[in-house]
Image 1: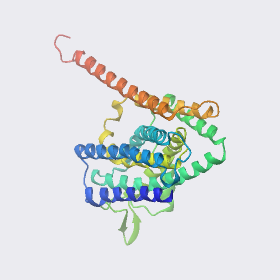
Image 2: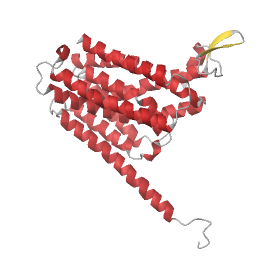
Image 3: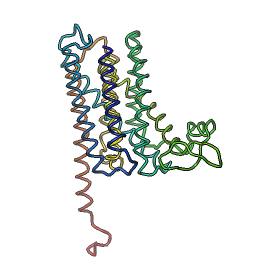
Image 4: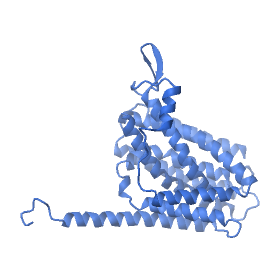
Length: 330
């Protein structure tokens, strides 16, 4: 099993090296065309890895999935479900990242660098959280009720918590970082450290990076328990999580300006979290097949996107039919 884990992390390291060392070697503003192309590549890689998951569990590479009937099909369904849920939850993450970039006035050509290193940090922190979550799930059955409660509460906040923006200006984290670290209120290209009046200080780019890392940890508190609602396999939880966040950088540049177009996506995600929370509460009484979970998640997400598209078209027709104030007929 160790060799399977090593192979996975070697693959991730190779992909990240290609991304920053070759494809995005020079800092530049990411165009929509570049972002769409990169998003398609990352999503294709993430979904294609489900084939690797099938092979690993079907042929029990490294002793994984031994003694489980239909291990390959179930593992593949669990991976795709977890990947889709994590990808959907990243929409809110993208919204907060966009706000942070606006607040710190991060130049467009350096945003990809911040997101790149933010992803590396997220992989480390999420790895630690997933390892801890796996240990808890395997040792204490009652942790499912804790995770279920977190998801139900998160669902409630998403449905009824309104759309209030985080108060970045009065963030305790930012105030604390400014107290403990020498922060210069300047940018020095894409550097995280600079020299001001003969003193080495961290730039605003580094402060933006730290803030994004902290926000990702907060989001992981919601997303990781959701994944454990579909699978107890640490390999599936880890791989689906990492592949979902690997494409977050390019996805940000695609949807950051159009997030509000998907009006019902947040509702769809909140319904999924609610159902997963309920599933965790009754996990000792009801067994939901992995394929059934996948179909439900796909159906709810597709329904949310379809309803959003219908609403956008209806709003466009109403706007076109509404008389203009300059119309002499009015």
